[in-house]
Length: 237
Image 1: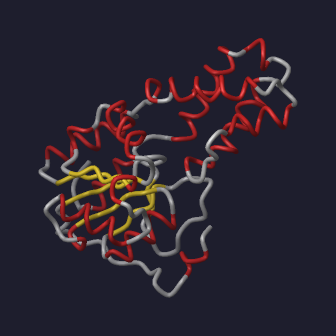
Image 2: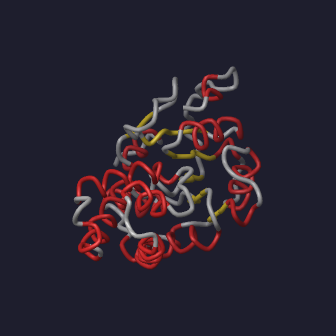
């Protein structure tokens, strides 16, 4: 984990009851990135079975998840790495890469818990937003594929903004576009550095969406499911 998470600037802020907006990270928070990559790997293995049968499903799936790095720092073409490691024909890398890009968005799934949470927050009059790092067109297509754009007053993508999490500027812009100050906003994310530390530095109230692949940030409220947000807001679920 980034050592900056343990810096003097990293400290818990008490949650308050005057939250007017809830903002979310996208990958790993609003949808389960690793689950999605595993689902894609299964479909891809079946589509390229003749090329990959000597590798085996378990090995192919595991390497996909390892190289994806939970969506943080994924190499441009992880399949070039796989093909080279396994001594497969070089042309296969581009075929796998193109299949991945063609099928990524169509296979995205939003959990029932996430859908219910967004419905309830919206019904209760809270402003909702997304802050996500990544290329503009690619991240925007994810929002549409999940069918959630209508929930959000603001979708802020680093590729459009020229600044990315954990920089405070992107959090401040997102809050302003939701019509609130950063101190009136809760931010929910899975990455202890980009999401939690970034939200803290911007003056937001961070909530860590617990994931087994990150070390828990100290002194910050953690949740397993998004619907746990309601208890933090002092409201029934």
